[in-house]
Each structure stands twice: as structure tokens, then as C-alpha cells.
Image 1 (cartoon, helix red, strand yellow):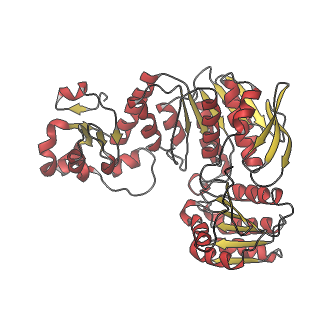
Image 2 (image 1 turned 180 degrees about the vertical axis):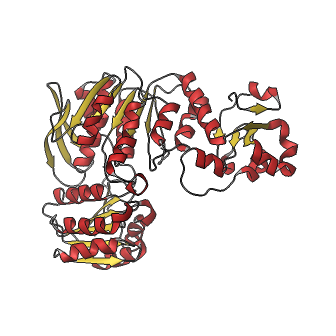
Image 3 (image 1 turned 60 degrees about the horizontal axis):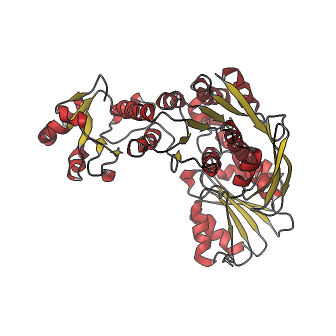
Amino acid sequence: MNGNASINDPALLASEVGSFAIDSREVQPGGVFFALSQPDYKNNGFNGDFDDSTPFVSSAFEKGAAACVVRQDRFDEHSEALARFGDRLIFVDDSIAAFQRLAHGVYLEWGKPVVAITGSAGKTTAKELTAHVLASGGRKVLRNIKNYNNGLGHPLTVLNLAADKSYDVAVLEMGMSTPMNEIARLCRITPPDVAVELNVLSVHVEHLGSIENVAKAKAELIEGMKTGGVAVLNADDPRVAAMESLSKGRTITFGIKTPADVRAEKIEFKRFGETTFTLSYRGDRSEVNFPLNGKHNILNALAAATVGISFGMTVAEIAKSLETVAPPPQRGEVLHFADGFTIINDSYNSNPAALLSMVETLFEGSAGTKRKIVVAGEMLELGPDAAKIHRETGEKIAASGIDMLIGVRGLANDMVAGANSAGLTADFAGDSEAAGDLLKDIVAPGDVILVKGSRGVRTEKVIEKLLEKFQLEVKDTE
């Protein structure tokens, strides 16, 4: 596995392994289980306390594992239970580091292009749009599922290449939340051929201290790109635009407000799920009927389009592809109810800029509707000024022209106070279930409701409460 690995049975080196797991419950017959422990997490930039999985080595073997990777010191602690498996154990100094080195080795053997995407908001949507665009050009695309964008999820994704080397390109989002050089570590596993920077927002400042430090952390993606690669930068974000000086190859910019290589022009919002714009690149233009909502998603589409251009696709090909995309679950998902109201389910994550962007989207897409209602959960990891930020966000929501705000949990109470002080009708709910109960008693035909919150607030439960009382509109399949 590397120079620091110790293998008691040399025959293991000749074994064909097609699956790898860090959860003993997910071990496949013939696979390899990596037993992780607190020192591994600490050494590799993970915050918090984590369970030692060395005691689950036995159950991994019971499920058919060919081998298990363990730290020598953890084996010594559990030697009585694990001694009988000694010839099938691989000893390492750091299980997570070994896991990442293995993924890097698999990547090197595969040897095809990697598109890496980061940003404070929109990573998953941009990843899905990019994968969709590239796949429409006939490429087989590997992409990380869910939010597998950290030091464990990323290598788990890459290790899929051990079982299937036929992928033509990997589109991988890279996340960070600490000052532990997380993106730089991910770039060492898979150095990007195309590095996409979406935005820099006041997210994770609790751990990084300032938005300037967030920008430095995000810039690790451009610093870690391959020499001669392509940097794809959002020209509308000054902190992203400034990263051009770090590019090790060609730079292509995208934007709406600012002069850029790839642009969206003549943007028109009809109703939710009906947006049109003109995609433009160096004089080539094509109309796009885009099924997602809001300028933030148009920027995500422009990022995907720019990647497509870097792979040699035409503007017309990209425009046609963008017309067939669908939002990932809980990320701008539009739900039309039979009773005549509409929910925009954006429950996956939240921060002040993303929330206000979605409020703008709500307003833009709700012309002629009855009421515009925002259900906004507490926003997490905003640092010592979190209460003030929530209050200011409430004031800005009140100024946006919406009709009602429901704040959900914790510091959302400050958001409600800010909205009330600015003259908006606003209520507070202690949790998402209570917010759902409140909403289902007041919702009426013609209403359009944005539901948005950080993952820990579980605002998807608001929609679950509505579904207890109301049915979704049945689509006409004819």
C-alpha cells in the first residue's frame, strides 16, 4: 500500500480487490475494510470526536472482507480479538492517509481528466450540471454522490475506478470547513485538469476566522490544479476573479453582471421551472430553456457550460444539454401541490448569501401569485457574529418584498426579530415540525413558499408535514 505499510501475508499483494469500505456494514465479499480511529481523523483535518472502528474488524471479516487495514497501535490494544486475523491484516501508521494514498494510486492508474468544483454554495448543483453536460457529449462520467466531498467521501468516490476503469472523466466537488488545508489534500489525491471556482461567501467563518481566510482555502483548488490545465472562474465574484493569478494554465471566466468569456444574456423568469436565457461564448449564441430557477443556478449552468467548452463542446450542444437537467433533491426542487400552491424545497444547506439569493429567486419567479412566504432555518457555523448576521438577514428579507417569514429554530429567532422590526409579518417556530404545522394551517391556493435551511435544522420536515395534509399535483403524462 505504501512504504509505511506492513503486510504479514505477501499473497495479499496479488489479490484482486474491487471494493473498499470505511463502514464495516458496507463491506463486500473480497473487499478491503479500513479501520479508522480518532488519531487518523485528527491528523487529517477532521473536527470533532469519532469512534474507533478497530473493534469492527471482526465483523468485516465475517462479511467476507479479504483484508483489513489497521493502525499497529490499535491492533495492539485489540490484539486478543484480532490476533486470529493476523495474516489478513495490513498495518499502517495512519488509516485515513493510507486510504487516500490508495485512491491516488488508483487515480494514477486510470489516468483520465478530473474536473474539480468548489465554492461556498452551489457545488453539488454545479457538479450535477457539469456531469450532465459532459455526459450529453457521449462521455461516461464518474461523480461523487450525495455530499461525498471531503477527505473520506472523495477517495471513496475515486476508488470506484478500481472496479470500473471505463469512465472517461471524473467530476468531483471538493468541500472544506476548517483551516486544515482540506482542498489541498483532495487535490493531492486527484490533481484537477479543470478547476472550477463558483463563489466565496461567509460560510465556515466560525472555523476559518474571516471571509479572506475562506477565500484562501478555496484558492487551494487553483493552486492544486495541473500545470497546463484550465481554471474556470466566476467573474461576478471579485474574490474568485482574483484567483486568476494563481492559474497554472488557461483561464476561462463566466458571469452575468461582469464581462466574462461565457455569459448569460437576455435572462427571463417566467414561473418556477421556466427560465430562458441566451448562452454566449466568443460570438456564438444559443437560446436555453432552463428548468432550474434563479440567477445562482444560471451561474451554476454557466460554470458547467464553461467546462463543456474546455472539453471542446459547442455552445449549441451545451444549450441543448442544459434544457434537460433536473435539480438535485432538496436543492431548488419545485413541488406543485394539487391545492394550487407551490413549494421551492431548498433544504440541503443555507447561509446568508444563499438564502437571500433564493429569496430573490422567489420574488423573481412569483409574479402574479398570491403570497410569497419564506420558511428559513437557523444558519449554522457563522461565528461570533451569528446573532447579528441573522438579524440583518431578517431585515434584508423584509426589504425584499415578500409577504411573510417563518424562522425555524435557534438563532432564526433573531432573523424573525429583524424582519418584524422592518415591518414584515414574521413568526418563529422552535423546530421544523412546528414550522410545518404552522404553515399547513395558513397556506392557501396561489401561495409560493421557499423552504430553506442548514442540514442540521432538517427543514425538509416542513414539507413532510405539508404532505400529511396536501397532495402533490399529478403531472400530465400524455
